[in-house]
Image 1: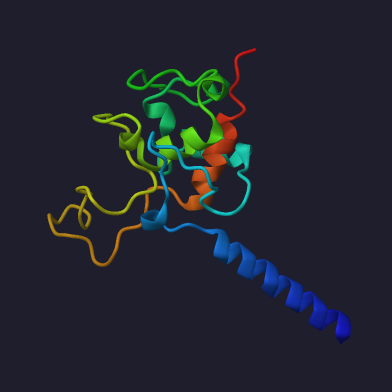
Image 2 (image 1 turned 180 degrees about the vertical axis):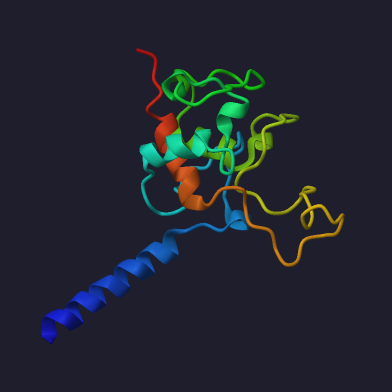
Length: 159
């Protein structure tokens, strides 16, 4: 009984610590140049899941605009954005997190979507009805998905 109680207490404490670590889209703190220093989820990213997000059309779909040699198993890489090979040598983790969260803070006028933003811009409405959506909008990617993509991007170094 005592062991069960201690296990439950530890589980709740870990859950509370995790819940306190997540940053809501409206609460993201950007530096002057658009970087985001702190993890959005309070947890490390999973590079394997980040690669999946980058090539999945219903998620990040990053390869629609960017070429990434490490993701050659996915078809139809785009040429709108820069090639991402060696991206971890050009930007640090905080800069990449900022670009994914809201690229316009770093590159004014970019066509890259803000993956962790929910206000201050026009977003699609309720399906194809021409009406506003019911309730608040979710970001395009969750805090953890942003961290996963950042973790994958940090593996892309020039050899």
